[in-house]
Length: 118
Image (cartoon, rainbow, N blue to C red; front, side):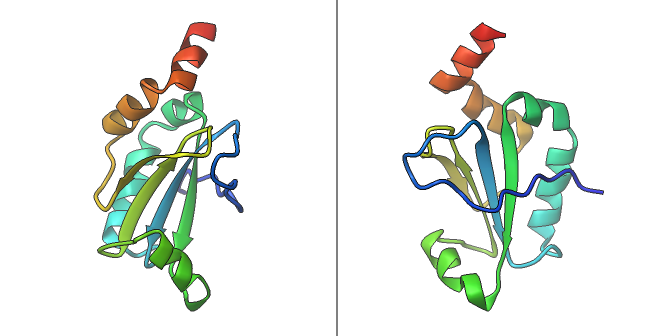
């Protein structure tokens, strides 16, 4: 069983949230890059939870084809990190290793404040 938290709706740009959202756009759950990315996330569930990360997956279908165009999905796979402030923090068409994800998040001002608080 894969560790995923599905978020049904993203906040409008600029609206704050108490979570960081990683959106994965893929053609299907059989997409090799999608499967590999989920396996990477499964390796450190605690690290994702500690950083308030939720994973949202959007699989392509005719109804959301426009969303895929807006997200500029390439090579049947795109991953987008949205910060708690609602702004896009990272985008890639390649796998996102946990170390890289954590490095991106851990330098964010909100994350630094969270680490000081804890």
